[in-house]
Length: 71
Image (cartoon, rainbow, N blue to C red; front, side, top):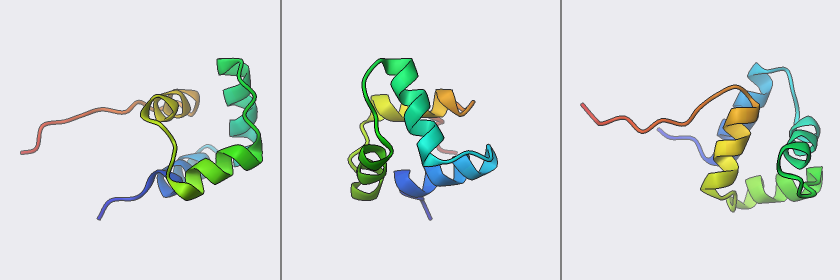
């Protein structure tokens, strides 16, 4: 069973003892674009987070996204 982006990001945040507010602030600092807690929450809830945004989020949380060939 696969998790949606919302669940995956929230799990990663929990592992890092962080929250959406902190992530939104880090995204704003990293990208220079205003990212509010509400905007980020809405994107996650609606499933409209772009792949490039997921890459930045993973990086900020100390993870990387990999594609592995199925066995």
